[in-house]
Image (tube, rainbow, N blue to C red; front, side):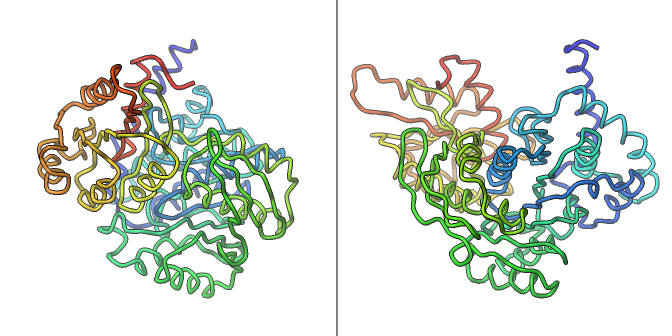
Length: 449
């Protein structure tokens, strides 16, 4: 088949998968996915894995682990969610989205079994269960040395939790998806701690005390060793550098200096420390080759996470979708950029803590353009405007219903030829908003160099 034929087939597969239960519809159980991978021959057990849960930083930490593992010579498979622009992003081999032909091959392998499972259970196989199984099969068919698997939601009953991880990583836990995970940090941590299993090593990023206590209890229950940020490993120093930051990290065994990380934000430096500890833990607590560490971190990318996608004016995309992520974004904008003014473009899902996110962003944004992505989950711009006015005041809020028009409006407003002020544009609120904005900016031309 031609590339066009492959692309058409991928689009058809995407449509078939999306016709299943959406990612937002959860029936907390491993019964269906366990039966599915069992009939597929348990492909997820044919390679060692690092399993990553948490509220914020999961995807970036996964990408960092992937890059570090690749620098050590390992052939990697990475499964993350959701995607920004293309479903193929979710299944990456050797740090690149899976080839369309390989994606098609893996789907053909599982498609008849999906129908069989649909008939066997009261609830059909969901979109996320299907794409998870597809990733497991792809990694087995196109052999990898290490699987890097990001949890979709929670942990205990997440479809990815049929792996037997060599290392379990839990990034910072905050409030999100409370309808499914609980209303306290302890409840949320308990669910996320469900990925901790006997025989694994656990790497914990810095946690609020309530979450830390619960996670340590989960680890003690199954008798596994724990490495904690700030105790067994730590970020010793960071300095802002052109295009990113320079780090010194004390790992589980080694100490690594002058690491260049081409990402912005203190939270990304902390993610780097967690990723490094996870890789050390995978190799039995051995110190890593410093050259591989430097090479791996220098190659890290994290699309949609404080990503500069345009110059003149500077346009930054950040997928912050909860107050914890919004606070990290605000801190990064304040401390690592020198804008005289910032215009925010904001589109969010209606089930999120919209007020909490906006209160975190209010001190750093001069003007807020409220809008809506194409997602059926998106809050209507009209409703979002009412909440935003309560926090920002009427004079600082502009409503533009279509996201493309909102991005273009912000870019035009930020271009002030007669002024010497530096005006930045930040698009945030959800992964879908950022993914769609990324495509919009590409069409506008003049991408960031």
